[in-house]
Length: 98
Length: 207
Image (tube, each protein chain N blue to C red):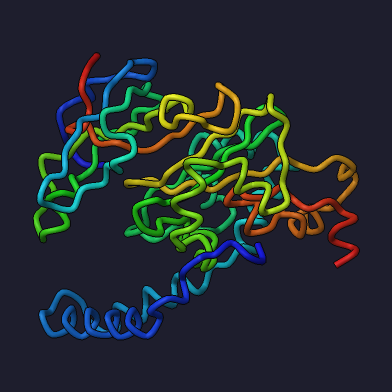
């Protein structure tokens, strides 16, 4: 875990995933971009892959969160219950407050 | 899964050649040595699903160990002699219960808890699994022979960053008197990814 500013969000916070296709290596799948989710876990900060992928040090490190989405919010005609969820790890620079 | 239309065989020659070219470039540019590459490959090959099964079976029989494993997988693994390489991504164990069924994928590439269960199966890296499991996890589970009640919450974990996820399958009924060693045989690679359940003792003795 790298040194970094403290995490802006805490478990239970509602967030929206930023939309974008930056000209770099990024780890935010497009299927969650623009979607609203909830912070499940705050993992601490990790070097930003958008810098690491190009030989940089990835600093400043980005707080990383496990974010939970309702499957029925992600897909129309989802075949399963409203309690079904999808979770993935998102760096703070991809999150927007709601 | 017999027929899931996965595409790992496509362009196999191309990908092998590309890997060789990247390896040659990494060495030529001094990023790493052939020794580093071989050492890392050996480390990955030294782990297999049997290692994960051993740890998870221990969690089935020792509730206090299970608590430690779920809270801090890396320390709990070290207790059993599994010292994860410093370069390995962080590891978290997710518990499947009567109410919650976790399953793991990496939609962006092939992130997988290699440090404890070795290399992923080919289908895990295939586009078919990666693209469909997030949209229709229950459909994919059915293809693997697993049907869950509607009341069970299915949680798909897309390993997209620094963490890798290992699933602790639910302990099957009728296994109360079994030894840890026999219990480990019930824990398959598929059940540790979450596309299947742990085997029943009958399934093991029939195989």
